[in-house]
Length: 216
Image (cartoon, rainbow, N blue to C red; front, side):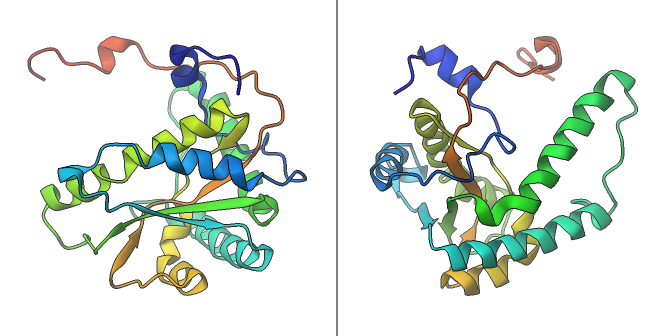
């Protein structure tokens, strides 16, 4: 366990890609400890419907990585909302944007080598459901995922929230035996030992741009 205060853990759990150790296996007991803590996260109505598929098999990881790479190429062409991702108009943020792009490409190129892939899921399909149903479904799995990532950080592991493979979710479901019509995938979390553990809090916008007191 790393010697971190609660505030340090919360402020230094980063999305890690280039500092994932691709050569060192992750001990199963560490994964289990993180999963047990993830189970303690709150869920809507305490239904505890979230489920995690933990992938360590090399063949399945390679297949998932192929799906992810195909999604990455599609993202570069289409973005998330139908247009390719564009550079920021703020010169002060371009360097950061380039770093993130380089890091994301590295993960797309090396995902098959990451020793553990974790695919969190929620029951049912919500694409055509009202917003309240979507919010309830995602709100019942995201706290568990964040608890998992925090627990991993505390143990010297690193992870990242990714969704690129969801461009081809059905293909990923076939690889993992997930019943597509009954279970929705939420993300793909690469998990590995961290190369170094000296992460810092990330740059953020002023709090005034983040918070609205009493009304918008």
